[in-house]
Each structure stands twice: as structure tokens, then as C-alpha cells.
Length: 35
Length: 149
Image 1: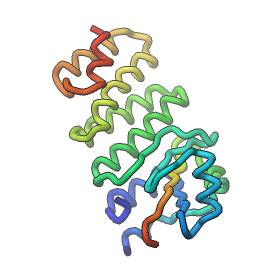
Image 2 (image 1 turned 120 degrees about the vertical axis):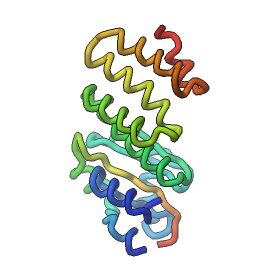
Image 3 (image 1 turned 135 degrees about the horizontal axis):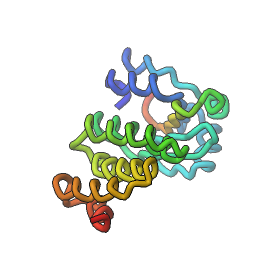
Image 4 (image 1 turned 60 degrees about the vertical axis):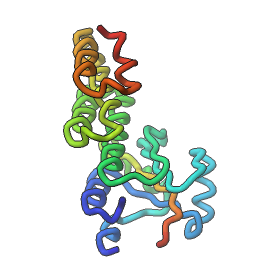
């Protein structure tokens, strides 16, 4: 879990899209995994 | 997948990660799953800055397979953006780093197409067809490349 937490998941897709660029795609994870 | 340090490092370096959890972000999950027609978990999309889906992973994958699919998505986005040299570099990265994954023959095919698009030299396609006679012969991608003799 300590390593998992190194990914800083965002939860606002539209805000994330604003930070995307040619070299940086949005990775959108539809998840049902335990949080 | 994500607990693996190679995955978390790759995701952090190359993507803006967004999670829509079926229970924890119920409204956002519903809105986005309808927008992108996601019907199962896990479903992982790679979306470009214009909001276009460029690649999709459905279901769990082991680490190397997952990483190869992430790299494939980056290559597809570069190709869609008509940056063919970058696309070829990224497709060849899949081939070199993950040669035993399902992504590798697909990457070999599209690396050839990317080079062709970049150079307009048909040798890129015949070279790719030849490469498929040496590796990944029994794949759909080899069949597709077989016309480029």
C-alpha cells in the first residue's frame, strides 16, 4: 500500500484533462478495487 | 498492477492519473463510464489532451503486460497526433522492453507504419513484413503485414 500511494490519483477528470499535453495523456482508471 | 514500483513510476512520469471508483466516486464514475462506454472494471483508458480515447485496457494484466499496454497507448497517441518519429520510437520501445507481450507484434506492425508515414519510403513496410517472418509469425499482425512483401 505504501508504494500504491505514490500514484497521486485525481478524481476530477476535466481538471486532469487541462493538465494533459502531447507527451502526457490522462490515464483514466475505472476501478472497483478496495481503497 | 499499481503496487508494483515500475508501474507507479511509469504512471507518475508519463500520465495524469485519474481514478473513477465505482463506489467512492459514484457520480463521476457514472458520468465518465457513459461518456467512454466503459462497461467493466478495471477498464483503463488513455485519453489525449483533446479528450479522445487513444487506447483501452480491459481487465487485469500482469505487470509487464500492463506496462507494455501503457507504452502502446503513448505510441498510439503520438501516431494520432501525426508525430510519426515519436510514434516509431515509442512502438520500438514496446518491442525492445516487452518482446514477450501481446503488445509486441502490434508494436512491430505500427513501428513500420510509423516509419513509412515519416519517410514515405515503402521499404519501411517491406522491412516490417520481413521482420514478421523472423518473429511473431503466428500472429494476426504478421498476417496483416504479409501483403507488404
